[in-house]
View 1 (cartoon, helix red, strand yellow):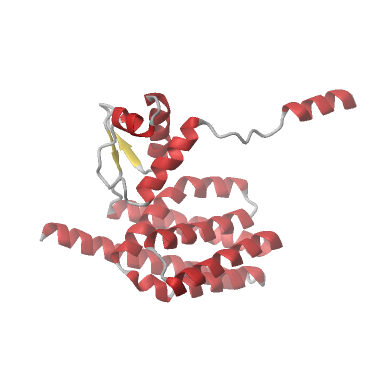
View 2 (tube, rainbow, N blue to C red):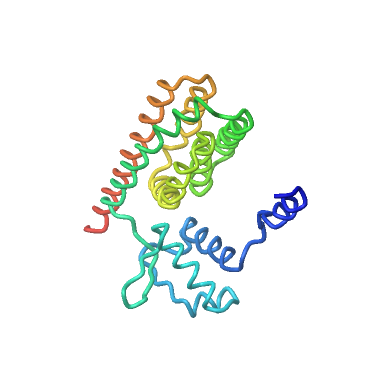
Length: 237
């Protein structure tokens, strides 16, 4: 290949940054689920969503298909779609898979983390601390918590691991949000626990990082499970 041909190929293979309409709709619907504006078990009618958002049904259909892949929407054989309500069984599966993935992620991050990503992680922890001091909302807590852990996977510099996490991430976000809404005691530990994980990664202490992430995720699982049990009891009463 000549230099001229190589330059031509490089010009062709420029990453496209323009977002499609379906991407915009997907983001809007995902955020509405995160904020609780679209509640669990709520029916998602393509025609009503299209009318409300001022678009055709095509982008709505594409977005719902992606949300189904993320585990945030359930589509029936007859085409009916509803917002997913994650069950206790879903919680167990998400937790067990996340625990396995994240132990690998922190090990890799402790070995490979770029200083720039470590600074981004510190920025998130600082933002959490500031938000707690002024009065953090459940939505902020879930967003920042998920963002911090997303950076752990990015710091691992392991593309397939990050892809696996990306599939799981929306369900983790929803579970965290339901936990934070149930009880606000998270304000007492959310900043310190994430700072401890970051400190272990920053000092390349793999063993400590694994211990911290296991304790952190196990604690989160226990708290979310407790909120699920309480919710199920309230529904039965």
